[in-house]
Image (cartoon, rainbow, N blue to C red; front, side):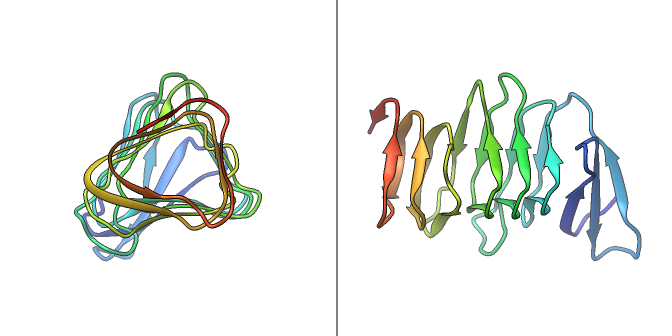
Length: 173
């Protein structure tokens, strides 16, 4: 088991997670099941270019108010993330989507939970679905134009992009 992980990679069908870090010269494989996934602090959930990740349960990314990748979600160019039914995404860090990346949480929402400032949403942000910003003291900035379904700011502050923020459903603040 890797205690000081610094990178993760899913196989092509999302059934295995590979973790590398500072505590050895091996690659640790974790077979994914229908259980929830918790990504520990000081790391990010990163889906590599052209890979697909289809989690079987809720994905919760933890953060420790750190900088860099702490608590972040990153889809590389062409990567795909599709949450299963009733799976909520909890993201306390930055959110990055590469060119032609696909992100879908079809029956739930993405909740941005940062309690610190300086978090960004960047990249090809079309089709984010339902988004909720809910972090006391959190501050997020859209660095790119985006489209969402429903858009809720429960707590914290959100800065819209210089381009377009298209909301096809309801807006609540």
